[in-house]
Amino acid sequence: MMVSAENDPRRHGTIWVLHVDQEMTAVAPRLRAEFSRLTLDLAPALASSTNSLSLTEITKRIESGRQCHVARVDGQIAAYGWVSFVEEDIGELNLRIKLLAGEAYIWDCATLPAFREKLLYSALLIHILGELHAQKICRAWIGANLENVASQKGIARAGFHHVADLIIERVLAMRQVWVIGLPDVPGPIVAEARRVFLNDRDKVWQSTAPTTVEAKSKGTIE
Image (cartoon, rainbow, N blue to C red; front, top):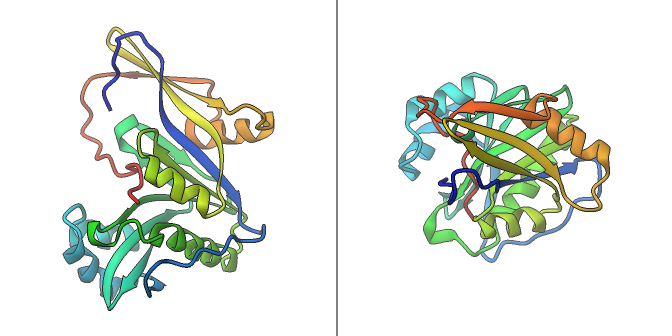
C-alpha cells in the first residue's frame, strides 16, 4: 500500500478479535453452501480454484500445521480462509504474528468473484470459529486492509470486535509501524493486540527497501 506523503502517518490495517467461548452470531449465506476443513488430498481442488495459491504452497501450509477451511457451492470451492496457531508472517508489512497457546490467527481469506456479496465470508468465519471452539481455542485474531470495507463488514457481521489499527509512518529510508487502540477499547485489549502484532514493542522500525518475503497475510476479500 502506498503512503500519500513521505512523513504522513497513515492507518494501514484494522485489527479485530473475538473470544471464541462467547455466543456466536448466526449468519445464513444467500445460497446453499457446505463448510469444512480442507484435507491434504483435496489441496488440488483449492489450487485449481484460485490463481493465487499453488499446490506446493497449499501442501506446505497444511503440512506445517496451518488449517484451511472452505465453503463449497454445488461442490465447487467458493471461499476459503487459513488459520495459524503459533506464528505467521504479514509479508507486506514485514511483521510476524506471534500467538500464545489457545490463540489463533485467521488470514489469507478470499471469496471467488462469482460468489461474492452472498454472505459466504461471514458464514465461513463463523464455521471456523466453531471449529476453533471445538479445538479449545479461546481467542481468534483477524486483520484487514483499511480500504477493504467489504471484508471489514464481513468480519463485523461474524461477531469480531474492531479493537485497534496499524499505523505506518515513512521517515526517509525507514518505516515505523505501531498499533493504536480505538476509542473506548480497554487498554489491556490494545496491549494484547500490540503483543500479537508487534511482539510487545511500542513501535517497529523497518527499512523501506523491497522485501522478498511473500505477502501471505493479505487483507481478506469478501
